[in-house]
Every structure is written in C-alpha cells, then in structure tokens.
Image 1 (cartoon, helix red, strand yellow):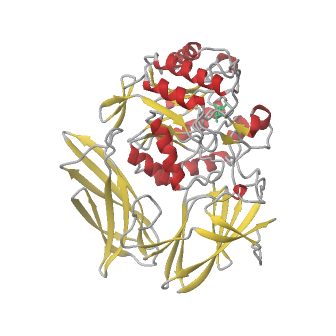
Image 2 (cartoon, rainbow, N blue to C red):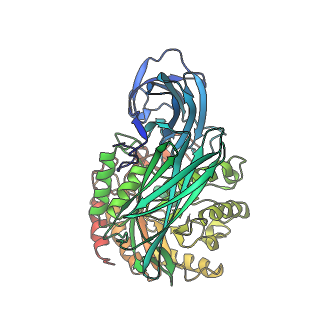
Image 3 (tube, rainbow, N blue to C red):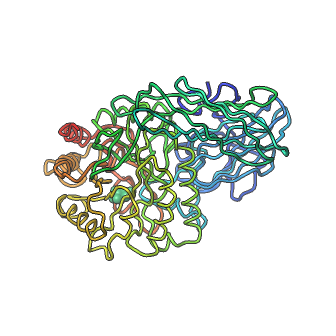
Length: 567
Ligand code: ADA
C-alpha cells in the first residue's frame, strides 16, 4: 500500500515513498552545494532540529532515487515551505511557491538506475512572497510534507473529480477523469471507472502532449449517504487501458452528500446542521507544521471529545491525510485558501493575485473529492471594505463558485463602523462569516457585535443568509492560574468561552461557530506588526490546548458549553 493517503491510491501504478533521512545543507544562494555536511528527516521543519531553530533562509536537500526501468518519472511533493526548487542529477526541473499545496513534476524518459534528487527550500521573507509573510502564525522551513516517486506510462491519469448528487430518489455522479498524454503521438485509450458496484467506460483519442478530461456518468442503486453520524465512504477506481493492456490506475475515496443553504440554514442531505467548530493551525511544539499522522489522529480525537463536529483550516489548505481523517470521522471542514489579513497595499501588489489564485486552484484541484469539505473559504480579514479589496474578493469568489457542490465564505472583521468603510463583499458569498472577540480585545458584547453584523447584512441586501461566527476566543497561558481570574489566566479564558458560547448559541440566525483556536501556535518574530509584543511566550495563546496538546481549563469549559447544544 502506498502511504500517500490513508487508503491505497494505486493497485497498478508503482509508487515509492521517499520519506526518510536526506542529506542537508544550509546555503546562501540558489546554487546546489557540492558537499552536504548534515542530514535531516523528510518530512520535517528545520526549526525543530538543532541548530536551525531560528533559521530563516535557504537549505539544500539530497537523496538517491532508483528507476527500476527506463520511463517517465513523476515526483509528488506534498508540501515544501515556502518555495521549492527541484533538481534531478543536478539539472533544474521545476519550482513551486507555497507551503500548503502539493505539486507534481514529470520528467520523461529517465534512464534505469540510480539518480540524485535535490531540493532547495526557501522560507525567507521577500517581495516575491506575498502570502508567506510575518504573521500571527509561523512560516516554517523545509520539506514539510511527504515526497513520492512514481513511474508513469506515456498516457496516465493525473487526477479525478467525482461529483455526486441526489435526484428523484437516486444518487448520481459525474466522474471527471483527467488524463495526460506525454507522448508525441495521438493515443487511443479506454478509461474504465468503477464505484460501489457500478462500472462505466469510455474510449477516447488523446492528442499528443495534451491533457484531456473524460466524463463518466453513474447512477447508483444502493448508497449510504455521507453524514456526520454515518460518514460512509466509497472507493472510486479509474483504470486506463491501451491496446497493449492495462496501463495505469488511480483510486480516490468519495462520499455522497449534498450541501445546500436554504432559509438561513445549512442543510446536509436536506437536514439542517449546526456547526460546533474550532479553528486549527497546523502547528505543534515538537513538529512545527510537519505534523505526523499519529498526531493528526490524536488531534481529531481531542476535537471529537470536545463535542465539536467541524474544523476550519485557518488560514491555508491542510495536509490531505488530515482531510482524509475528517472524511472518516464525519467532521465538517471549512477549508481556506492561503492568506490572512491582506490590506490594500498587499492585495494590490502585482504578485498577490497570481499567487493567491494559484493556491486556490491547487486547493480546489487536489481536495475536490473530500466529502468532509462543505465550505470553501478565502481571504480571512482582508480589505473587504475597500474597492481595491473587493476586486480581489470578486476574482476569488468567481473561482470558488465554479464548485456548485459546496458553500463558500470568508471571515470578515470589517462590519464595525469604527473601522472606517464597512464590508462591501458580503453579497459574493453564500454564508456570511464574521470574526469577533467579545470580552477579549474590546468591551462589546456578543449581542452588540451581532447587531453590527446584522445591520451590515441588511444594508447590503444580505439579510436572511446563514451567519457563522468564524472566530471568537481569548488568550490563556497553560498553567497560569489566578484567583482574580485575570486576562491570560486559564480561568479567564475558560470563563470567556463559557459565556460567549452560551450567548452565541442563543442567537437564532447563527448556524455555526468556530472557536479561536484549537492549539497554541508559534508566531513570527519579525515584521511591522511586532507580533511578539502582544503574544506572551511568542505564541498565540488562544488554544484550548497548548502547543503539546495539554488541555487547558478552557478545553473542559468549551466541552461543557458545546454539550448544551444538541442539534
Ligand atoms: C484574527 C485572525 C487570526 C488571529 C486572531 C487573534 O481574527 O483571523 O488569525 O490572529 O485574530 O488571535 O487575534
């Protein structure tokens, strides 16, 4: 079994896991070193390994790979933070920007035998990086997610989009299978798709050096729908056959569910759901953002034990294995494209649109088949109250709206009059989501905040849309106790969550909450915002568990508060 996902993705195609100890060397420029003087585990964040704890810069990685026969080498990188340059036998073969999305490269006709794979990872702040900036979370460095090697035929299956829907008492699906032809000839292939006992196929001609989408239509007789209570999952296998026989395959895991927004409610398979959620950054005191599967599993169980049913992947796409676990546990996911807090100068920077749209494309392409993802999100707390910002939101929502099988939203904090012009973008999203920090940053109550949100929704013709409170919470330092229950004590944080959760649950038009946040996270030292000055221990301490997952009083208070709502 391959380890790319939590299920086998191939029965035919050969995939090798390249995780392990690679050679490692910090460097000063984009020039491969001749000698490597250190080693490091892949995946990992170099900050978690001495002596690189504060290293921000460039580093080279090297490993040997084996081609068992001459053929097309496909390399899959699940995440390099934040820029990766890839070299095979010393030759440059590709580049990728952004830590949080996977990418693949194909090198045709690679000779049988041993080869050297090298990667330069770069986590520097620079003008060229408009999404990874000093922030209220940390941009780690290194090959932070797994790497795989594959041998692919000239015509191979690149990916699958499986879109199910329910109509007239039956489940239907369209499977869009994306096939690539690397060869210089037009190829004739048969594409076979099978799922839940149904089989469909199509014969296609695919021109030289192009990518083609093959549509397979299915109608199913007996299907268990995917839900929080019963997260039923099915395997979809696509097989590619040429006149020489079976050549390639790709297996995806899918779930059958419909997501709608109706009468101010979120409906899953026609049933209203209330989202009791939590914001989770990919961060851990021992692993940084390179969280191993065992810890992902433990995180899911901590979150389930809270009585939560939803997670927001603030503020970037997550590791696919974590999304796989959410599928299995019936946890609803709001997956967010990468960005946090874009002001007008950043949103209008010539590289911002290109970089943010690319991440969004990669998120949609790679995570399309997760039934757990019911909401796509983008542009957390950006300049949605400025004309220039609204233009960027428009472009993002035009792309998100191409997926009709999910809802979309963004977390706004621009509904308050005292922040100047109010939000201009509420009409672009299917749900209205707002971040608020009652009893923490300001003195406004839950009710006062909600009144401002509702007023802005009315003013912009969006009254009646479901409201989500996408963030609320306060800081609490693990093991700091105080009889006065002062700010930063575990007591204050627990009291805040008890009170705010109760007050939000009493609001009829709110259909979900996402507490800020699951675990304490490391924050950037640099940058004009001087984050450490307002973040004791150089962490955002609003986690209900600390960076090592030790529960604070807030964890138990939230568990109690969540148990008050049973729908
Ligand atoms: C914002 C932001 C979060 C975090 C939070 C906080 O709402 O979306 O990333 O910075 O505030 O802790 O203040």
